[in-house]
Image (cartoon, rainbow, N blue to C red; front, side, top):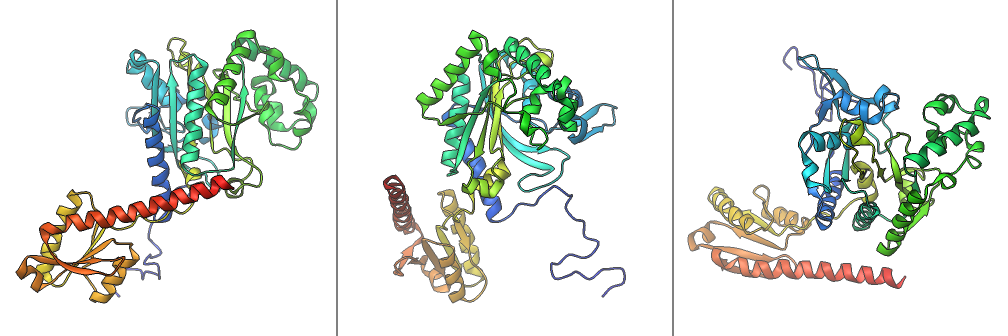
Length: 455
């Protein structure tokens, strides 16, 4: 061994190999396929609801998040990745999407497109304790409607979220729904909560005592055992709703019923920041469900609400808005391991000349939208076995004789039948094989759905 070099261990990594930063992840194999499946399904459902795709900067001026999330929140005070750039500006890696989208709505003149329906996905950053399904660099899908004051916007967003979860095959998750009322209702409720919790202040947790004057709504969401005995008797929002706020919530719930979206009332579901109004919601795993086993019964799969006061906080005109976000990692955990997509064609070249021809043929087939793998190493029998393991519909064997005659050996991997074809004659039987395979898969899926319906 040369002096100055450390011997690698069995993983191929030496002691001085840099390690991943705590709270980040490298995604590969089935995990990466599930991650991609979540994103692809979101993109498909987004288009069904006519939400426009947007891309946002990964960092913003710190004030964007400080003003939108509130200086006193844990995210701003403890969890943001902020730094000073060379120009002396304080910048922050985005901890969530909504604030940046609201900023873009104002600075780019997107008001002309209102009501603006947009969707995006990508990485977010928070310095918090890594745990199951939660990372310091994590990823979310996000959907927002800006400039729509009608309850229909809330219904459409929730119907979209419900359809997304169904199309991902995620079961055992229930929509928890509450109203925070309009500004008048919320302030009256807030005053009543302060008065109520002041009477038991000394018995509350330290966090709730600190929140009492600044943000009493967040006490309702406390998981601390010391706070739990006082939550059932705390004032409820319904007693303070204005007629307009009550009508808004009734329009949302009746719209969800009409759309076939199941929901339950969650009176303690709140959003602490003042700019939130009316609808607040979370999709939460049902106790005993596979989703609860994977994430925990109280974990939120997807959540959001109406934030009519945010854009005004950022210096814009009062603008109604509603949105939701969901963690891709968490959704991918619920999706589980996916079946690998079958290979269409395996090309097996026998020799260097055949390899060059195989590369040309592979390019032609891929241009025709067939998946192709060139298996160029190993014994012919082992290569054929690899083609079978990959689920190839057909294998093309090319040797010196085939090169001389301008043909290929075409093997149907399902039946084992083999024939000699011209290069031009490959596409028709290949189309028949892949179509038959796809139809058989579709028949199996329909049969499975029928079995579920019978149950």
